[in-house]
Image (cartoon, rainbow, N blue to C red; front, side, top):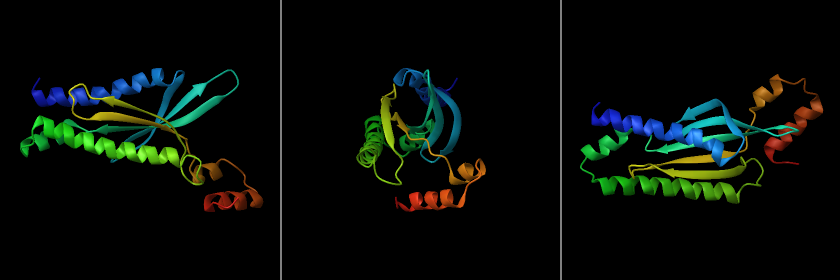
Length: 165
């Protein structure tokens, strides 16, 4: 296998290994489904069961870099390995500042609640995987579709969305 294929495999394995390790990070939690993906990563529904209830959260997984071709582009532009590592470290530090802000706003109205986070450095020293465990939100459309809402419930939900108690 060529070097590029090996690096891509390592990057893909990095995220997959972290998803498997997630069970150890939050004992009893398991990945139920992928909720979505975007430019920053993937979001999963995770569950934990105890004797009286099932708890759910969302787990966002951000891989920096997202794939080996990003690293190859930086190399081809003339960046050194140290420069590439520093570049991705800077991106990760920016995301960690955002996580700190999420933590400080965890009780604010209309802001998703932060629960926990973990960071895994990539074995090659270039980049990391950031896992953020947070409140699992139900889209309003899904919430309404599964219920026969009364007028007072609709008004209450609209007030909650507007930040009025």
